[in-house]
Amino acid sequence: MVTEEFVQQVMQDCNKDRTKTFAEFIASVFKGKFIEIYLGDSYEEVSTEQISTSYPAVFCGKVMGAYRECLIVSSVFTNKSKKLQLGNLMFISERAIRALNEIDGNGIMEDMFLRSKESLDIKEEFIDK
Image 1: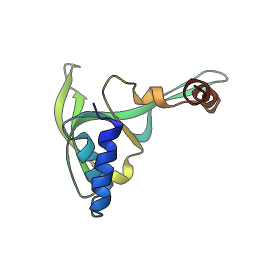
Image 2 (image 1 turned 90 degrees about the horizontal axis):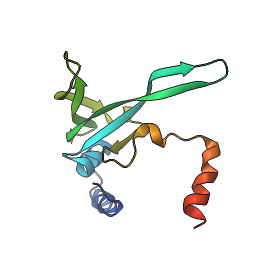
Image 3 (image 1 turned 90 degrees about the vertical axis):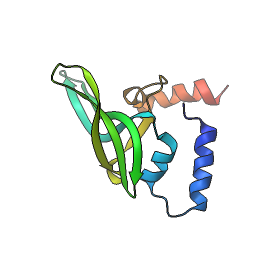
Image 4 (image 1 turned 30 degrees about the vertical axis):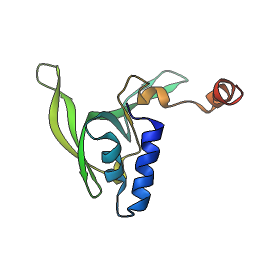
């Protein structure tokens, strides 16, 4: 699992070497780890009369590395038998990435999208303690 301390160390190393790109930074932090990447799209929108809910579409896979602004991921996909399979190489422009996180059991991208009203819950749960 990637820790805050590890990310801080990688950030310090990247600040010394000003030539690293965002994709290279991500590859340094997550190399060999499974991540989900959100590019800003929805895979489904469910609407009722008064409420519309969007579900974020994500790519999932294992970080292989980066070349300049290109993040290289061995992606997970559904094969013809409808089973998950790993190994479809995906090349993602760092400019397309809106958010990403490690698949580590500490929440998924969909769980991190909150409504503004929930910010007060964060204050009560984490800030006021």
